[in-house]
Length: 367
Image 1 (tube, rainbow, N blue to C red):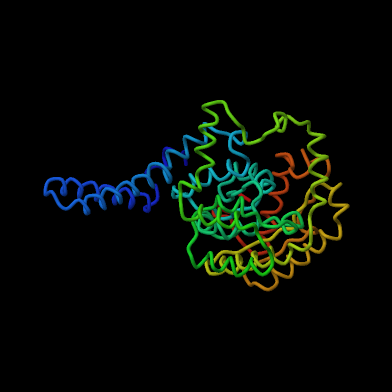
Image 2: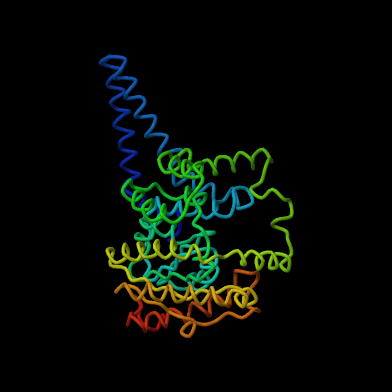
């Protein structure tokens, strides 16, 4: 559905805030007529101002939609660009897809070519998205998935510490959810106090969370700083980019497996309560790097397979069931081209449908 067509089904929470603003405005007019105490007027004016700002400055679907067409990753950063798109989506009621693939930019480039031709599949891909983000974005995931969630994971995803710098851009979390996450994360990982404070401030204050957007817009209008300091970062040759990425893949470490698997475990439990199936697919990256990380890659597959075996709503698809990418399929160290992604996804949807005896919402011929 085109964006303008979706404006008629903006979430009820936004209409509630708008209604609250109107009520406060009417009451203010009433106060002016009846001339109440100064304290009541100040209180009403403060409440109305906060609600008005929350709607029109910090949670405004029109603001996010306009910003998408004005700023780019070069202005605000890769993860911030992904966040901007999903900030718009969480304020709009979207149609649920039978299959929802979620994950990092790898997931985005693999599944999007097929999803653009098939309504049964939707994609939620964000730069650097990992197990912690799956929990932080679970409410948005629940609104977009109707039957199966597809996670394409490997040591690339399990071998890195979850980032609070990226997590602070997530939608606001309930207090009980924050406590649950703290219980999972704190025994295993430690973070600088400034990152924790940043995350908590962003979770409770919309203006603080959205500062990346306002700063990016101002910088673009004034021609000032970019998100990427070096002028040639986005102009680097494909060969040099691939070398840099392959070198970075050597930083993967098994010490983060325990934490990321624990977060995934909690996510799959949540999905079961939402009556959603979770299909975990053995992920992959450039063969040259995978050869050097072969042992780590196998350990990740074993950890993911064992995790899925412990949940009735989860299934693991190993390398023997899905297609494998070749070195020629990759445009850099992590991402494949659209043709390879389409081929991979088409085959995978068939495998998932067969394993769980799922029929396309539009009939088997669509798959």
